Length: 283
Image 1 (cartoon, rainbow, N blue to C red):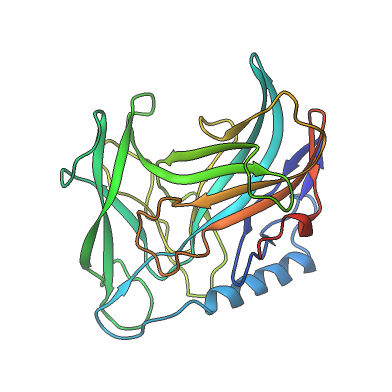
Image 2 (image 1 turned 90 degrees about the vertical axis):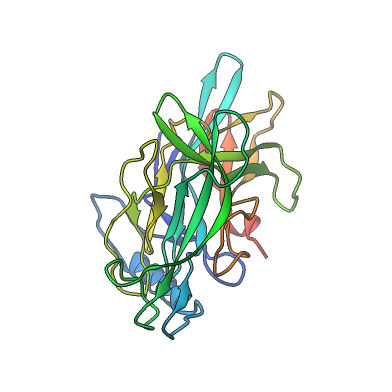
């Protein structure tokens, strides 16, 4: 974690297993990896290794989505007040890809398009995804995709939810209930299931979208939706910045109960600094 000019810069982190384990994935470029980061990666590998594996031919290879704690957290002044801006990432640490395809299989509002989630089967029965061997076993209706005319492609609706709370409370001070994502492989995350090659690239209006096993989709802090409007009367102090992947439960996963992450922050005027991690721990 770097602190420069009141901005929190974090290369990546992952919430994992019973409760929430916040793991630092990288350090400053100047310092390289240290013992703390190696230990964090080892804990993450152990957590991923605890994922249930289905080792028989024809078993479904489902994804497992997890939000990563917010990165690059900072405050920007706008004409109508202050914005808490941050980058966020959705990681897939499951044994199968998260893949969605635009189709005409369901009803959606105007300027939206229905999406189907694709589930692959484990052809070899080894609990690993092999794109050359594993075929599609089934599809599920997965909600709607939004037409994003500026980007000229579809965004999958309700991929994330953000909220700012005080420690020990669940009432949001500020929130974004549904944030849409164009799904792609942006960054690798540690995993104990063997290497998976990057597959899902730039989005297009009719292209398949997804996140490969062991990869995360990263949305920068300067992109639309990556912010919370702060109340004018917000006092300085300790706060908890929450992120939840797939908040409406539209996608099939191996575990629906581990999609949340939290970042502890301390706000002082227009500066954001690291907060007390234990104050925002998720039981």
